[in-house]
Amino acid sequence: MASPGRRVVVVGATGNVGTSVVQAFGADPRVDSILGLARRLPKWSPAKTRWASADIGDESTDLTEHFAGADAVIHLAWLFQPTHHPATTWRTNVHGSSRVFDAAAAAGVPALIYAPFVGAYSPGPKDRIVDESWPTHGWPESALCREKAYVERVLDAFELQHPEIRVVRLRPGFILKREAAGEQHRLFRGPLVPKRLTHPERMPALPAVPGMRYQALHTHDAAEAFRQATVRTVHGAFNLAAEPVVDAPMLAEMFGARTFPLPGWPARAAVSAAWRTHLLRTPPSLFDAVLHFPIMDTSRAQRELDWTPRYTVQEALQEWLAGLHENASMPTPPLASSTERASRGRVEVGAWKT
Image 1 (cartoon, rainbow, N blue to C red):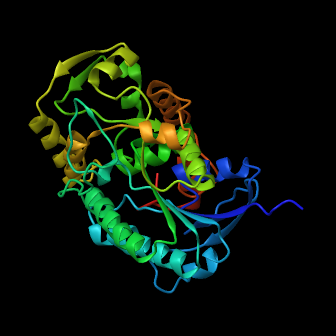
Image 2 (image 1 turned 180 degrees about the horizontal axis):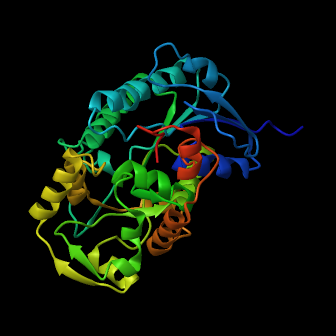
């Protein structure tokens, strides 16, 4: 008689990464069932998946009952907005994450998979790569990075208290796919920044800001790493990113544009002014953090997860831009198109993890 397949729970299953993770598990014959948790239930029926509503930051929500009998919990839930009200993001991102970890332990879940993001790392070099042993204290002025770093410390203590649980931390760069472009535009740029400004033909020249080098990957590639981390008996941290590193020369070549040098201070001043006046949703502290993100070595993921990105960074960016201008969407609340959102008469102040 064949042994039963795995049961997995995906917390924050309706966002950019969550939807791709659910699809990856749905196509894996070793996975029998998937429970997707989200604050708002989607009108989407992927294979092997059922849904339940849960707010991880709400003390009245019993997460343990959702995790009972699971072989793995994949924690993706995260609020990026509202950046002007960090107490709100802390409630979900730190307090909520702690509740997820505690509930996984109480339910006896054998594996916990979490996505800290490159923002958990302390400032690092741009001219060489660093592995997973690089310190994870974040950029202190950024709420996003502080929260990511704090949760890393929570997990450190959790692992000491629960050595019986296999804990995996996947640290990706920026994660992109076609259907998430609209959500990410709303989260980081905001509705007052026109999409037409992101057309390549409208960018004849790109600013080359010192230190503005970062990594990215396609969401489907990130989801494959989550699947592999679940079905393999690995533990610890893994960096995730595709090639090449994103910088002004790479973007200029991609768009057929030229570059011009721009010091960091006027760029930051412009971001700061736009954020203070609510024209832009990206805070200046995150701009500073990106300037200090290290360049990650992904060789451990390649060795131990048998993971190699299928998409180059250019391919992921081209697809993301196409999705932005096509108003691409999925039938989940975070990834709904602007037309669908307007028809519901709702204004988003936050979304599950991208």
